[in-house]
Image 1 (cartoon, rainbow, N blue to C red):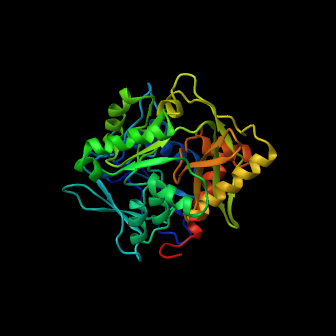
Image 2 (image 1 turned 60 degrees about the horizontal axis):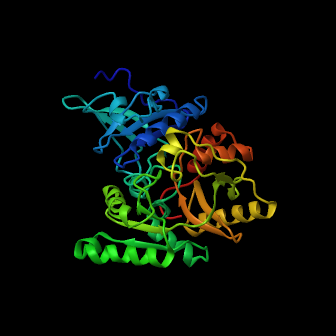
Image 3 (image 1 turned 45 degrees about the vertical axis):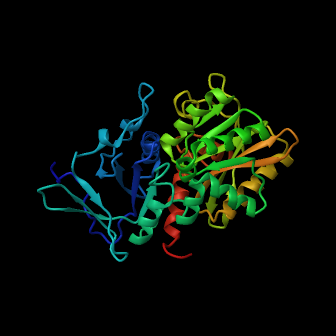
Length: 385
């Protein structure tokens, strides 16, 4: 590959801040991350920022990709991949390891490494493990490069549904009944681990939701209506994570609320309601991204309910020490109580995703949302804060 068309290191001291949009990754949410990156690349104000798209392949290679958002869309019900977008099958992008140096380098076998210039802020749009879970955030902390979104601790807590619920409970937020099966339990006595799930169903009733403990976008989740489907549901969850979480079904309405960090602190958006999708057993990956099941924005709640869920969303944001953005998901039970299901520290972020839609209804456009997140990251230093 020729390096003559690669981004050049700007010489002007008054250059625009450079934003590296990092996407793809090694998780099962690789494809939707690429779709999200396309939307973010379209939305970034090129009069204010320079942009450097960096894709991470499913085997972990950091690849230079073309700045072509139109190639990052879902086509024929299939999500794109970084391998389809990479400028080279072997070239690799390397971040600096010295906090005093933000120079990004591109290298290919047999070629002289090429400096791509300094990166001022990273906009990560990686969903799931190896990106949303604190691993990428730790790398950026070591590199001294500011980044959009939550830090190491809050990203890790937000990714692991077990510890997320433990944190919420310790701060007085109400969560639904759940059970965790760790891989060691399964390996030591599979029958005993399965009996724990059956006993949990006996206590809380069917259906149950069997989930990977550290995944998102509803990937690997199965709604189980009885014993006959339990083994397949466990196997599906374990395909994505050796640790699984089993949750009791809560009777009520699904309500979501976005939280965004402004200069004066976090604020909550108007909430949305996720109605039961007609063609799906629950709000799964296909309902969210392929069939684009619409949510109701704003949610048809009373003024008191709206104020309460917005308050609780900010409480959840603060409880997990979040920064930047979070989507908080609740159930409004039949007795009028909000029960928090989870937070997502890098929520679905395509223009049709609920987080941007909620902020659109609150008066913040998608382009403004992207700009606010970049500005918040540029204000923040790395390290202890």
